[in-house]
Length: 217
Length: 217
Image (cartoon, each protein chain N blue to C red):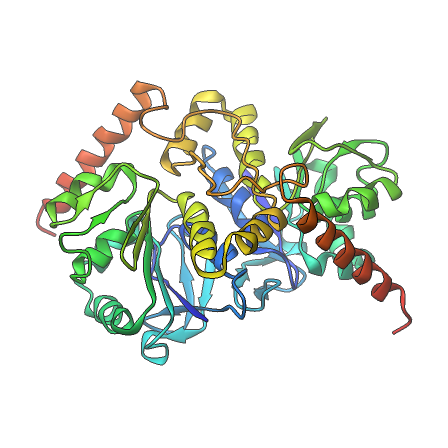
C-alpha cells in the first residue's frame, strides 16, 4: 500500500502531516513524500522543512495520492511537473485525495471536472469557477476522489479513508493511538461558528490577495 | 516570540506539527526546530523527515519550549544533550510544554516534580512513577508547565496557549484559518470511548514492550 504525499514550496504543514499520521496506520503502509526534486521543501511559514524522499518520476503508480494545500498552491496551477504527475498517478491510483486548496491542484490537472469536492472555506468559490461542484462538507467522497476542507480536516479524511480501506476497527485503533478525541478550547473552526467580524476580515484579506495576483508581475 | 520544538530520532510527527501549526499563529512567532545535531531527523515510521535548523546549543533561551513524544523518547531519558537543554531553556522560558510522552522527558529533566501533568493514555502510570501527578485531562496547565495527552492533543494545547498569550480572538482566528472544526468519523479517541478490546490489546502490547526493554541488551 504505497501512499504518495506531494510537496511543493509553501505548502501548509498540517495539510500534509494530518493525512500522513492517519494513513501511516494502514496495514503495510509505505508513505513517501514526493516533489519535483528530492530534498528539503519549505512550508508556508518558512520555519518547517520536510524532506521529499523521491521525485515525482520515481513514484508513478502509488495506491493513494495526497495533495496538500497552502499558499504555494497558486504557483502550482500551471506547473506541469506537479499536474502531469497527478494525471499519471491518478491513472492507476485506488484513491486520489487532497486537503485544503490541494483540490484546486486536482482540478487544474483536470481530475475533478463535474465532481463534488471541497476545499478551504475561503477557496470554495474558486473551486466552483473551475467546474467543480463545491460542498460545505468537511470530507467529500466522489468515487475514488476524496477531498477535505481546510488544513486540520486532513486528519478526519485520513481516518475515514483508513476505515474504508481497512475497516472500522483499524480506523478506531489508529484514532485511539493518536488519542484523537478533540477538545478545541474555542468553537471557531468554521465560518458558521467563528465570530462574524473574523470571517469578514479573512474574506477581505483574501479578496485583496486575489486582486494582487491579477496585477501584472 | 521564539518557539523551540525539540526533535530526536523516532519522534511522532503530529506531536511536533500540531503545536507548530497553532503556535506559528502567535504574533511575531519565530518557530525553530532544534536537535542535538542540525539536519534531518526521522519520525517513528521512518517515512517522514523533518529538518532541525539549529542545534540545542544555538537556541538556549526560547520563549516557549515544546517537546514532542514518540517511541524514540525512551532512548532520550538519560540523554544529557536533550535533558540538559531542557533545563537550560526552561530556566528562562515563559512556557515549557510537551505533547504525549514528551512529558516523560520533562520529568526526566527534573522539571515536573510534584506537578500535575498529562501524557499519552498508555504512559500515565509511568508518569506517576517518576513523581508527577498524572491527570486524565487532555491539556494540563500547572504554572508555566503545559502538557498535552497523546499525539493529536498538541493542537488543542497550542490553541489554548495562543489564547493565553495573545487573547481569545487571536486563537479563534488561528482556529478558523486552520478550519479546526473536528468531525472524527469514529468516536474512539480515548480509552473511555474506544472499544474495550482495542484498549486491552494496546495495554498488553505496551506491557510486552516494557518487559522487552527490561531485558539485558
